[in-house]
Length: 269
Image (cartoon, rainbow, N blue to C red; front, side, top):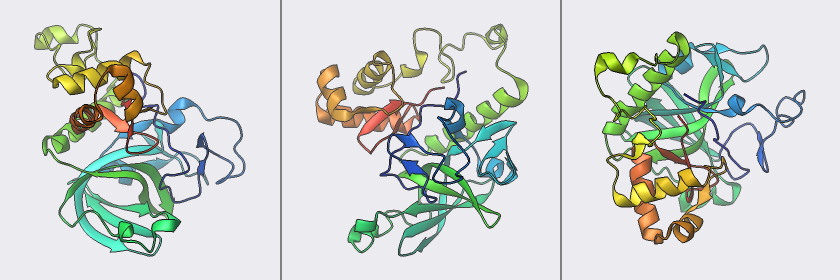
């Protein structure tokens, strides 16, 4: 299994500590002591439960990094229910509960939208959502600075996320699956976590989702993602087909948005 990497953001995102610079993450704007590019794994995306965030250990004294299962973690994705919503002038704070714990998620508003209708919360209490964001700590209280929050349209995504977080936890604590492990359980080539060279993860997808996934795979899956208009042009699809394919792939946690809501990359497992 490769690192959950390639998750990139730009200055248009919603982080809450001024940590964005054009072209990627910058170390100088927060700590002042970091220099040079960060390792890829340092900004990799990891699916976690909220309990894992609560139990995470600080990676370094005075740093905003955390360690889960002995691995540095900064970018996380969680799935849970919105319990409370608190709207401020500059941000909206959602309290998310996934059954293992609860944590605040802060979605920061663009300055030119703070007084507009677009600044109103788009979710309501008891909605299920998926959050992609950066793990933060302020006054010894942990929260997530959200890059993207999207509704969960299929409840299977809740179960899928818990399974994926468990799989990654077991990978880091017990090591990768043994090569002969499949023999005991029979032929499990249809597993969502198995890559048998024929890319079994796209089995069962509709034609539009499979065509979009195949194109992203052939393109090399750049970390900054590929815009839907480029996908449509290069893959011979209509914009509507790309949108429908993207919705199906996102519901399975196979792709994610990067630069904006119309730019996609494969979530590398």
